[in-house]
Length: 152
Ligand code: SF4
Ligand code: SF4
Image 1 (cartoon, rainbow, N blue to C red):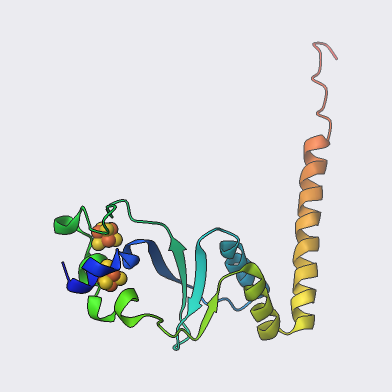
Image 2: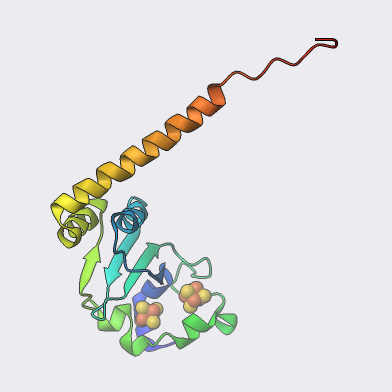
């Protein structure tokens, strides 16, 4: 175990993170906003424009002392992780943008799309969903044709 890891308590083992598509439309921003409604979720954007989602969720192999119980058989992603350039050693990665709440993401979406376009897309999307749900409700309420009795 690296010296730094002995002091760190396993910061890199308390979340997982993966790349997501960079949102460009209202609907895509809505998907990302939905992620952020979930506890422990953060979105960050790197300098090259790549978007990532990070979910705070402790690895089940991390023991109470911050050591890996699966060390000899740890996944490749853990083997490749470099303690010289990690959460503990490097500290803040200096992301271009970080979103921690739905409101932060929404503010960014409004800025990117423009407030009018944002509001228009939002109204259209809400109306479309309402129409679809109304159609579905009408279909389920429609009385079924009475079965014909013999001879009718
Ligand atoms: S690699 Fe870095 S973040 Fe992970 S346990 Fe070691 S010192 Fe901590
Ligand atoms: S498998 Fe081990 S090294 Fe990998 S995240 Fe879990 S505790 Fe950390």
